[in-house]
Structures are given as structure tokens and as C-alpha cells.
Amino acid sequence: MQVCLNGTRGAADGTRVPLTPEAMARDAARAVAAGACDVHVHPKTPCGHDSLSPRVVAPVLEAIRRRVPVPVGVTTGAWAEPDPAARLERVRGWTVLPDHASVNWHEPGAEELAAALIDRGVGVEAGIWSGTDGAARFARSPLGPKVLRVLAEVTDPSPDTAGASPRRLLDDVGSAFGRPVLLHGQDGGAWPVLRLAGRLGLATRIGLEDTLTLPDGQQAADNARLVAEALREYAEARDASSR
Image (cartoon, rainbow, N blue to C red; front, side, top):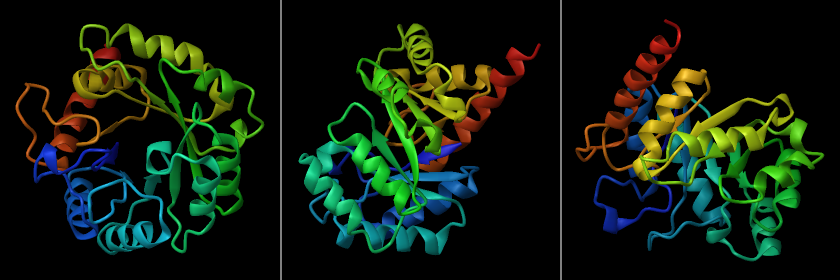
């Protein structure tokens, strides 16, 4: 179970969303204590914007690693640095390296960015989003067999269609070059997709990046509560599928 601490959310989403390095580290520690075995985080500027700057990424990684012994990964989303060349330069300038980084395969410059990360010894999560051509691009990529895993991201937020959307995405992903697949949804689709991952025995994730609410619709107090509920939901779905 990976915990995704904050995503692109900001102060408007409430004080429970960790935005500073120390807040991220405290939240990561609680989530790992609740059962998370991997951390995904979006480093933020003091203004709360996602950033790939070495001066922003390094303090976040250092703070979290002081508190948890599990792998820590970051985003490389194009929204944090829209220009592909500048994004590549940012990543090449990182002074503290994450264990892994997500690369959205539908974004311009994804191949070059993934290659640079692999060259630096950083594991690549190949982000394949539903509703994009990411799966088709990834299927043609010579880097496919070299990625750490495929991050199958169901962008459909509706719980009503969260059953069919992930299955279509998994069909598009196909064999994924034999790499592990982590399946997750977002907002209203987060919990239905997590349960499907449990039934299929796939890795998954949960956190305030993906949803602010618990399965019963109540607001989640923090990432640790989401992780605890996710592990319970996942185990129940897994058990039901084996009967």
C-alpha cells in the first residue's frame, strides 16, 4: 500500500493536507505506522505550488527519510514545470535523489525524462492515465522493461463508472512489459478502484492526493486514517475474491 500524501491539493483543501517538509514527514510517519510501505509526495514551494526545483525537493526527501524507513518517491508532473527541457534540467539538477519518481507517459518529454531518471538510478513509475494515449506510447517505449512499475491512474472520478473505467485501462496497459502494476483511482472513484485492485491482487495506493473522504463519505482526518481504512477494504475485497 502506497500512501500519496498531498498531490496538487493546497491550503484550500484544509490544514490536514501536508504542505511543508516537516508536515509531510510527520504525516508520512503516521501513515507508515498505519501500514503504508511506500510514500509518494509532491514537494511544494512556500506558496504551496508543486515544484521540481532541487532546492524544494531535497528538504522534503531529507525530512521524510529522517522519519520513515520505506521508499519515497516524488512527482515529475508537467504542471510543476510545463517546459519539457526545463523539467529535464530540473531533474538532472537534483542533489538528493528520490527512490522513485512518477513520469506521466502522455506528457511531452516523458521518454527523455524517464531515461534521465533511470540513468541516475531513480526508479520510474510509468504513469498511464485513462483517457490519454499514454498506454499506446508506453507500449512502443524501449524503456518499458526498465521501469520500476506501471502506475495505472483511473482519472474517472465517478463511483458509478469506476467499475468499467479501470478494466478498460488495464486492457490498454496489457502485459506492461511484465512490470508490476499499481492501480488507483481518484475522488469518487478512489475506493471502488481500490477494491478492484484488491480483488485482482494488484498493488494500490491511497492518500489525500486521491481522496479527502473515507469509504462512508466522512472527511478523513489524515493520511494515516485513509491508509488504515484502505488496508481493511483491500483485505476484505481480496478475501471475497478467493471464496
